[in-house]
Length: 468
Image (cartoon, rainbow, N blue to C red; front, side):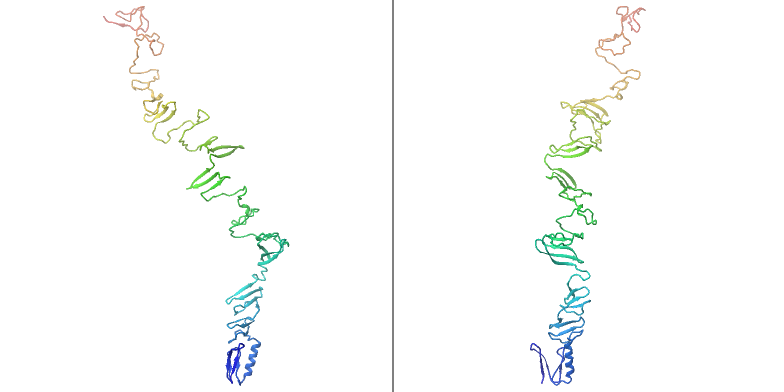
């Protein structure tokens, strides 16, 4: 008669006919009257005692079956699809081989617990090894006057580096490096701890230090303050065309437009002043006056280059303008053009003295234009000639001997030359003429048919003889 072998749940595992064996499971099952069943029975008992200890899983396990994995020295149970650790974790210096998903392993060297994910061992904790000592975040409770406060403390090598808190408080039990704890992250003051890296914003900057950590890590004391007067040792660059704005009401601005720079005093009718310290006295050599748009200059002015004035020049403190230069040059670079000096008069005909380039001589006169009818040549010594006969229509001068030569001389209203003073060199004029011939013998005998006698006349007298 065949045996029907049932599992615990009542389901049939196998039906074994008489005199046969069955290997449907990890154990050898034998039928009625099977010869030599004793050996198989004893082996089954041994397998149960050792939980089928082996490096390989049982060939035909049943759900709930135990297997001692000698590879990892751990007892496992079959869950219907795979062998899983029966409980606890394997403690060893090296990771177990052939683990199953969910297996636990305690690293005996580092005192850390791992779980097998099915593909790799994943660290459960702690995050630090035994050699690293306490490192990472720890949740702690600190006492304070306001009650216990739950904080997160960051440790590195068993040293607390920072405390993260949701509120500000003072611990009632001394915490090394933390006399008070701020809302947020507080660093250990005994370590000189700092934030290293890029920070997008900060509520405060410590300006007590001025020594830079590096060329890119700058001490807070080297930043320019906006709330107080401060000093810069380097150049200030404003890389924007809107430029610099100064003043409580932004009176002064320096801006750029199309590479043109504008310095503006924006307050209505107010001045832009440039001052200097002259021997301890503040002076204003240059002032741009807002009320009239003028420029006021005080003191000596030195100009290197050309001075181009489109309006009038006026000296308000004197009627005489004094120049230290030896010459005044006009029409510089203007080509061939009449140029000179104009004196304004009460009428429209101003007095002028100018150089006439078409005639190559100086002219003077009065009129609105430099026409020939209004102006005449200014005579130079070089323009005069000694020989009026040869160079007609020229101004005359005497020769080196004192002579004057002309072609003819016409004297109006002169009837006779009756001048007796031969030493007088003055030119005779009306009322002071010399007669051509004087009387002699006490009577008028300027013309006679007879010669004068020895007692007639005087030396130098003329005598005209009239023929019969």
